[in-house]
Length: 248
Image 1 (cartoon, rainbow, N blue to C red):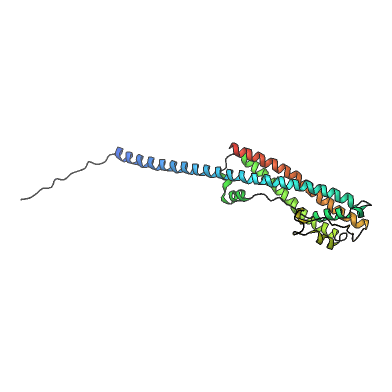
Image 2 (cartoon, helix red, strand yellow; image 1 turned 60 degrees about the vertical axis):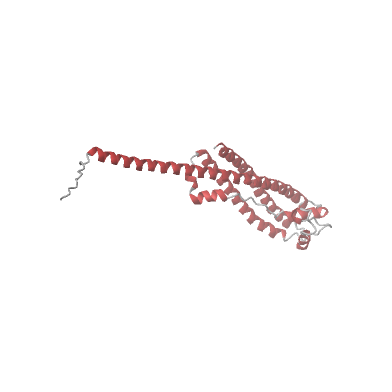
Protein backbone atom coordinates (compact mmCIF):
# COMPACT_ATOMS: atom_id res chain seq x y z
CA UNK A 1 0.00 0.00 0.00
CA UNK A 2 1.48 3.29 -1.01
CA UNK A 3 1.39 6.26 1.22
CA UNK A 4 1.19 9.61 -0.48
CA UNK A 5 2.58 12.63 1.40
CA UNK A 6 0.84 15.83 0.64
CA UNK A 7 3.05 18.55 -0.89
CA UNK A 8 2.55 22.14 0.27
CA UNK A 9 3.23 24.54 -2.54
CA UNK A 10 3.93 28.07 -1.28
CA UNK A 11 2.74 30.82 -3.50
CA UNK A 12 5.46 32.98 -5.04
CA UNK A 13 6.32 36.13 -3.00
CA UNK A 14 5.18 39.29 -4.59
CA UNK A 15 6.90 42.69 -4.80
CA UNK A 16 5.00 44.09 -1.83
CA UNK A 17 6.41 41.43 0.47
CA UNK A 18 9.97 42.09 -0.66
CA UNK A 19 9.40 45.83 -0.38
CA UNK A 20 7.95 45.40 3.10
CA UNK A 21 10.92 43.36 4.28
CA UNK A 22 13.34 45.86 2.77
CA UNK A 23 11.52 48.71 4.44
CA UNK A 24 11.65 46.97 7.82
CA UNK A 25 15.38 46.34 7.46
CA UNK A 26 15.94 49.91 6.30
CA UNK A 27 13.99 51.31 9.21
CA UNK A 28 15.85 49.10 11.69
CA UNK A 29 19.23 50.18 10.34
CA UNK A 30 18.17 53.85 10.21
CA UNK A 31 16.77 53.80 13.72
CA UNK A 32 19.93 52.09 14.95
CA UNK A 33 22.02 54.77 13.24
CA UNK A 34 20.00 57.56 14.80
CA UNK A 35 20.07 55.86 18.19
CA UNK A 36 23.87 55.59 18.01
CA UNK A 37 24.14 59.26 17.01
CA UNK A 38 21.89 60.27 19.89
CA UNK A 39 23.94 58.15 22.28
CA UNK A 40 27.18 59.73 21.04
CA UNK A 41 25.62 63.18 21.25
CA UNK A 42 24.66 62.69 24.88
CA UNK A 43 28.04 61.14 25.66
CA UNK A 44 29.85 64.13 24.12
CA UNK A 45 27.54 66.53 25.90
CA UNK A 46 28.28 64.83 29.22
CA UNK A 47 32.01 64.84 28.48
CA UNK A 48 31.92 68.54 27.56
CA UNK A 49 30.04 69.25 30.80
CA UNK A 50 32.74 67.40 32.77
CA UNK A 51 35.51 69.29 30.97
CA UNK A 52 33.91 72.63 31.84
CA UNK A 53 33.30 71.61 35.43
CA UNK A 54 36.95 70.59 35.83
CA UNK A 55 38.11 73.75 34.05
CA UNK A 56 36.09 75.93 36.42
CA UNK A 57 37.75 74.16 39.34
CA UNK A 58 41.20 74.81 37.83
CA UNK A 59 40.34 78.47 37.28
CA UNK A 60 39.33 78.87 40.90
CA UNK A 61 42.72 77.48 41.92
CA UNK A 62 44.38 79.91 39.50
CA UNK A 63 42.46 82.81 41.04
CA UNK A 64 43.79 81.92 44.48
CA UNK A 65 47.33 81.64 43.09
CA UNK A 66 46.96 84.99 41.33
CA UNK A 67 45.83 86.67 44.55
CA UNK A 68 48.96 85.38 46.30
CA UNK A 69 51.26 86.41 43.43
CA UNK A 70 49.74 89.89 43.18
CA UNK A 71 50.16 90.44 46.93
CA UNK A 72 53.75 89.20 46.69
CA UNK A 73 54.58 91.63 43.90
CA UNK A 74 53.08 94.54 45.82
CA UNK A 75 55.33 93.75 48.78
CA UNK A 76 58.31 93.39 46.43
CA UNK A 77 57.59 96.78 44.86
CA UNK A 78 57.59 98.44 48.28
CA UNK A 79 60.89 96.77 49.12
CA UNK A 80 62.40 97.88 45.81
CA UNK A 81 61.41 101.49 46.39
CA UNK A 82 62.96 101.45 49.85
CA UNK A 83 66.11 99.69 48.62
CA UNK A 84 66.82 102.21 45.85
CA UNK A 85 66.13 105.27 48.02
CA UNK A 86 68.31 104.05 50.88
CA UNK A 87 71.13 102.65 48.75
CA UNK A 88 71.57 105.87 46.75
CA UNK A 89 71.24 108.05 49.83
CA UNK A 90 74.36 109.67 51.33
CA UNK A 91 73.23 108.17 54.65
CA UNK A 92 73.31 104.59 53.30
CA UNK A 93 75.64 103.41 56.08
CA UNK A 94 73.02 104.35 58.66
CA UNK A 95 70.52 102.07 56.96
CA UNK A 96 72.87 99.22 56.03
CA UNK A 97 70.78 96.62 57.90
CA UNK A 98 67.65 97.57 55.98
CA UNK A 99 69.53 97.73 52.66
CA UNK A 100 71.04 94.29 53.17
CA UNK A 101 67.65 92.87 54.07
CA UNK A 102 65.89 94.29 51.00
CA UNK A 103 68.77 93.23 48.74
CA UNK A 104 68.71 89.70 50.22
CA UNK A 105 64.96 89.42 49.68
CA UNK A 106 64.91 90.84 46.17
CA UNK A 107 66.07 87.76 44.21
CA UNK A 108 63.37 85.61 45.82
CA UNK A 109 60.51 84.99 43.42
CA UNK A 110 57.11 83.40 43.65
CA UNK A 111 56.19 82.90 39.98
CA UNK A 112 52.65 82.17 38.93
CA UNK A 113 52.06 78.79 37.33
CA UNK A 114 48.56 78.13 36.07
CA UNK A 115 46.77 74.85 36.72
CA UNK A 116 47.21 73.13 33.36
CA UNK A 117 45.50 69.77 33.97
CA UNK A 118 42.15 70.23 32.26
CA UNK A 119 43.34 72.44 29.40
CA UNK A 120 46.16 70.01 28.62
CA UNK A 121 43.75 67.06 28.69
CA UNK A 122 41.30 68.85 26.41
CA UNK A 123 44.06 69.67 23.95
CA UNK A 124 45.44 66.13 23.92
CA UNK A 125 41.99 64.48 23.65
CA UNK A 126 40.58 66.93 21.11
CA UNK A 127 38.11 68.11 23.70
CA UNK A 128 37.74 71.58 22.22
CA UNK A 129 35.78 70.22 19.25
CA UNK A 130 32.89 69.16 21.49
CA UNK A 131 32.55 72.62 23.04
CA UNK A 132 29.86 74.41 21.08
CA UNK A 133 29.62 77.59 23.14
CA UNK A 134 31.57 80.17 21.13
CA UNK A 135 31.65 82.64 24.03
CA UNK A 136 33.37 80.11 26.29
CA UNK A 137 35.83 79.08 23.57
CA UNK A 138 36.78 82.73 22.95
CA UNK A 139 37.24 83.35 26.67
CA UNK A 140 39.44 80.25 26.97
CA UNK A 141 41.60 81.45 24.08
CA UNK A 142 41.97 84.91 25.66
CA UNK A 143 42.84 83.33 29.01
CA UNK A 144 45.53 81.10 27.50
CA UNK A 145 47.05 84.03 25.58
CA UNK A 146 47.17 86.22 28.71
CA UNK A 147 48.66 83.39 30.73
CA UNK A 148 51.41 82.88 28.15
CA UNK A 149 52.33 86.58 28.34
CA UNK A 150 52.88 86.23 32.08
CA UNK A 151 55.15 83.23 31.54
CA UNK A 152 57.21 85.20 29.00
CA UNK A 153 57.72 88.11 31.40
CA UNK A 154 58.64 85.70 34.21
CA UNK A 155 61.32 84.21 31.94
CA UNK A 156 62.58 87.73 31.27
CA UNK A 157 62.76 88.34 35.02
CA UNK A 158 64.99 85.26 35.34
CA UNK A 159 67.46 86.73 32.85
CA UNK A 160 67.43 90.14 34.52
CA UNK A 161 67.94 88.52 37.90
CA UNK A 162 71.25 87.04 36.72
CA UNK A 163 72.52 90.50 35.76
CA UNK A 164 71.30 91.98 39.04
CA UNK A 165 73.11 89.35 41.10
CA UNK A 166 76.31 90.03 39.18
CA UNK A 167 76.06 93.72 40.01
CA UNK A 168 75.22 92.92 43.64
CA UNK A 169 78.47 90.95 43.99
CA UNK A 170 80.38 94.24 43.78
CA UNK A 171 78.49 95.87 46.66
CA UNK A 172 77.39 93.30 49.24
CA UNK A 173 79.38 91.01 51.49
CA UNK A 174 78.45 87.38 50.82
CA UNK A 175 79.19 86.44 54.45
CA UNK A 176 76.50 88.83 55.64
CA UNK A 177 74.00 87.41 53.14
CA UNK A 178 74.84 83.89 54.27
CA UNK A 179 74.34 84.67 57.97
CA UNK A 180 70.93 86.23 57.32
CA UNK A 181 69.40 82.90 56.25
CA UNK A 182 68.75 80.45 59.07
CA UNK A 183 65.67 78.16 58.94
CA UNK A 184 66.17 76.99 62.53
CA UNK A 185 66.56 80.38 64.21
CA UNK A 186 64.51 82.57 61.85
CA UNK A 187 61.28 80.62 61.68
CA UNK A 188 59.30 83.78 62.50
CA UNK A 189 60.70 85.59 59.45
CA UNK A 190 59.51 85.31 55.87
CA UNK A 191 61.69 82.85 53.93
CA UNK A 192 63.76 82.46 57.14
CA UNK A 193 65.70 85.62 56.26
CA UNK A 194 66.42 88.00 59.12
CA UNK A 195 67.98 91.48 58.87
CA UNK A 196 71.54 91.76 60.23
CA UNK A 197 71.66 92.47 63.93
CA UNK A 198 74.60 94.86 63.50
CA UNK A 199 75.37 97.44 60.78
CA UNK A 200 76.86 95.61 57.81
CA UNK A 201 79.68 96.97 55.65
CA UNK A 202 79.47 97.40 51.90
CA UNK A 203 82.28 96.00 49.78
CA UNK A 204 82.02 99.00 47.46
CA UNK A 205 80.57 102.49 47.66
CA UNK A 206 81.62 103.45 44.18
CA UNK A 207 78.74 105.56 42.74
CA UNK A 208 79.02 103.88 39.35
CA UNK A 209 78.68 100.40 40.83
CA UNK A 210 75.87 101.47 43.13
CA UNK A 211 74.02 103.00 40.20
CA UNK A 212 74.58 99.91 38.02
CA UNK A 213 73.03 97.70 40.67
CA UNK A 214 70.16 100.16 41.19
CA UNK A 215 69.43 100.16 37.45
CA UNK A 216 69.11 96.38 37.39
CA UNK A 217 66.82 96.60 40.42
CA UNK A 218 64.67 99.11 38.51
CA UNK A 219 64.54 96.73 35.53
CA UNK A 220 63.39 93.90 37.78
CA UNK A 221 60.77 96.16 39.32
CA UNK A 222 59.50 97.17 35.86
CA UNK A 223 58.98 93.52 34.96
CA UNK A 224 57.28 92.88 38.29
CA UNK A 225 54.91 95.81 37.74
CA UNK A 226 54.03 94.71 34.20
CA UNK A 227 53.48 91.18 35.41
CA UNK A 228 51.27 92.34 38.26
CA UNK A 229 49.06 94.29 35.85
CA UNK A 230 48.80 91.25 33.57
CA UNK A 231 47.91 89.11 36.58
CA UNK A 232 45.10 91.49 37.50
CA UNK A 233 43.82 91.19 33.93
CA UNK A 234 44.17 87.41 33.99
CA UNK A 235 42.24 87.28 37.25
CA UNK A 236 39.38 89.23 35.64
CA UNK A 237 39.40 86.87 32.65
CA UNK A 238 39.38 83.83 34.95
CA UNK A 239 36.40 85.23 36.87
CA UNK A 240 34.50 86.00 33.66
CA UNK A 241 35.21 82.51 32.32
CA UNK A 242 34.03 80.87 35.53
CA UNK A 243 30.77 82.85 35.35
CA UNK A 244 30.25 81.85 31.70
CA UNK A 245 30.87 78.19 32.53
CA UNK A 246 28.48 78.22 35.47
CA UNK A 247 25.80 79.77 33.26
CA UNK A 248 26.38 76.99 30.76
